[in-house]
Image 1 (cartoon, helix red, strand yellow):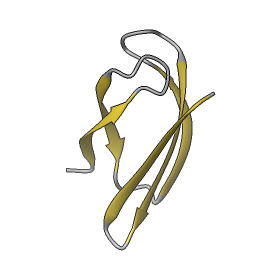
Image 2 (cartoon, helix red, strand yellow):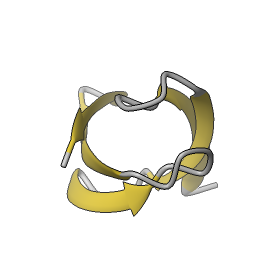
Image 3 (tube, rainbow, N blue to C red):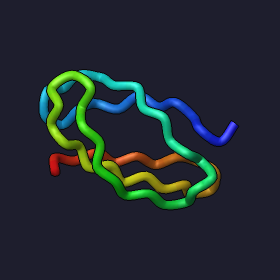
Image 4 (cartoon, rainbow, N blue to C red):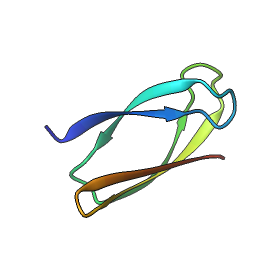
Length: 59
């Protein structure tokens, strides 16, 4: 399966969110709104040695 669920914490409201990432793409940068507070979260995702590294920031 290329899409995998991961849990991240919203940098605005602190809620834990489950998001899906396409693990077939080595590097991803995009913005998605928080499912709880609706603020825009900036996602930086990269695959390093088969491990997913996720960084979330305020936009």
